[in-house]
Image 1 (cartoon, rainbow, N blue to C red):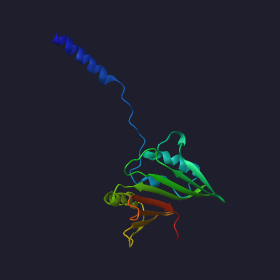
Image 2: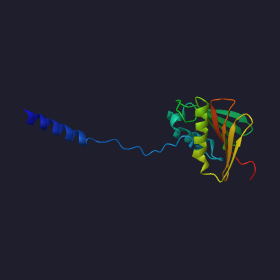
Image 3: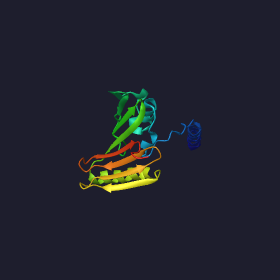
Length: 178
């Protein structure tokens, strides 16, 4: 009897071991705070919309839920809201275009309290600062923290607002001075 049970268990184990395993996902998700790297000044509006679903909490089928707002005179805007709230991921994204070319991207993150907001600011800054040659850090009179990071064709501003205890933003725009 024990031999029969051992034989059945052995065959069951062999069958389980031979079943097809699901393929490992090859899609790489951006690290929290590195989502801004998906966008570049000069991208077309369509390219920006195509890049948005690569951010994990913004995944939506066929781009549903993205609202395009016309500003007139060759200017337009796009705002994307997340499908779900996810810690360390953007909770709002706004984009501005001139003649359908990206001129500004702003990603807003949320943090539960001042300590979490400070940690998020440090993590966002640490996640993007290594790719930039020049960085200027500033603490304002009211305790706001800002860092300007200068790239070849754009500038990033990472900002922790003290007036709003939940917001940390990363904004990309063309450099003021070339």
